[in-house]
Length: 147
Length: 101
Image 1: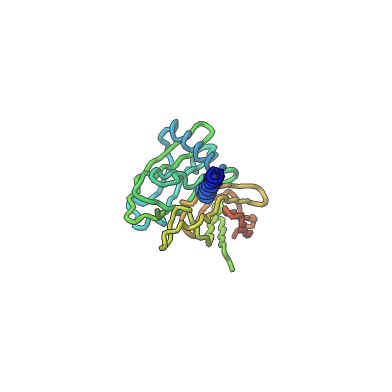
Image 2 (image 1 turned 90 degrees about the horizontal axis):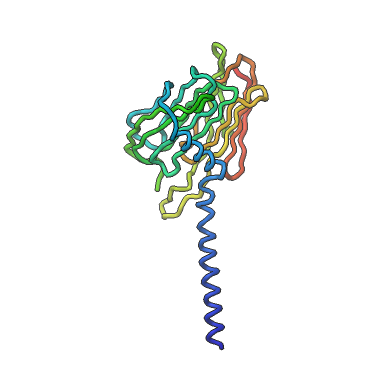
């Protein structure tokens, strides 16, 4: 009887311990992306899958010495009715870098992004008449995302 | 301490807004020297307003560089009020308002 009780208790304790360890692990992963950002990431992937090559400017360096700071400029200001602009880095752990919603501004964005390794950078411009993309390969000599 | 800097300059009907935010932008993927994961601390949302009307919004991830820099263009003239706000994943808000030059 005693032995059974001991077994039961030990099982209970270990299951609690595993639950705690999972519980401790999950917050880091769960917070890696907010639900809003995940939704946007999915949206961008959908946009990517049925987009055509667009006529706008994507400025990115061919070789980035430091992956922690890669300047990106997207200029689609001559395109009509631009709704959103997304920067998508294919080889990053979190591929979506930024998602801009253009309401009363021109479709012109400059920012600096981090890149883990050499990758194709895609700018996605969503307009009223569909999505347009432009690709550029950026070579990275030193990664900036850690890992 | 100025944690956020904004410059707004109007030219030919457009205001160029340049923003520099002082922020570590930890993505939550990086490990420190002892091998522990550096907790995530990055900006998640940006809001840009002109004369109290929303001009642009952004959702950004941890893959924007440290001390992020942004440049926007808004149709406008000298004297327009530009307001910029950023929110990070810890709920901290930074904001700045400036009259365009």
